[in-house]
Length: 409
Image 1 (spheres, rainbow, N blue to C red):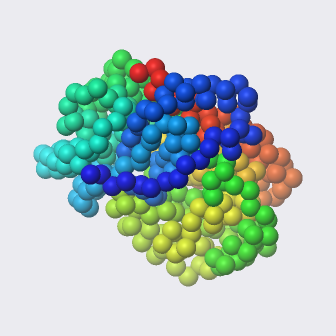
Image 2 (tube, rainbow, N blue to C red):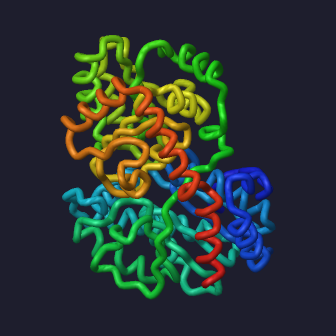
């Protein structure tokens, strides 16, 4: 049996203050149509990264609406997760080659996880490349299968894409974050475009008093009275952590006392993250105003919440980005963002709402300095971003999109 992630039950009524009455009625109607259905959400890790955050919120709401929903996590060894991280990188455009051993190992673990998936469901929603081939090994059944891609596949490595295409084709539906992410080589009878969303009542996004935030940052060694830049992301080369450090150093030369927080959650399915973390720690050694913090040293969702609320500017220097939940998280708290124009980030900051979209380190430095020097304008930009998130990127909208898709199958 696949590992089961135990989550609670959340009644949908707690989300109704965040949605229109029309959307609330539609969600309840869709839920009545699907009532009693068995839905399995399957991914690679119970913590670390956007997918696990989405499932931690979505699955309890499903259950609260009377839909039997489970969250299952696949198993694998470091070699398997190293291979799937290389697939992840390749789908985002990295030059990777698939050796025969890598292909065999990937399929062997997908077959093993398929054998462990011994419960029956009406719907399977499979997330990202790691468990993609499970559908192939389960064979035909009465269930409907959906594959959900959370990464930027607009310019994929052809060799890896070709290897995976046959497994895409076996799904009843495939979901991408943006139309631009659908690979030209992919032909499928049912494609859906569903952007992710944040949960406004989760510990990461719920209201926190300013004094509580200050106490949290002080506890973590940050001075809440000094200006603060923050990037929240995995330690991943696509997030450009060294570029973040460079922006900080250049801005600090003009803003004495500036601090940098680099916050990350280390994940089971990302062995590359440990090496990047080591490099970041080495690079920042000796600078007491750079704070590298992870879930391994007491940084949970509540602490991330406090960092995002008290930061003067949130950075997101991603080179590739599937969506970047941290953009909507930061904007929801009224904090302005300086972010690379990458992947799904412009979708959240269309027209520069909530901050500045940039295309170089120089621009990131310039725009960060501008926000630090114009706090009233920064605050106004943050408020505009908050409204954008309220309208488009909260969990009930994502829930409605996903329920519509299931109902259509």
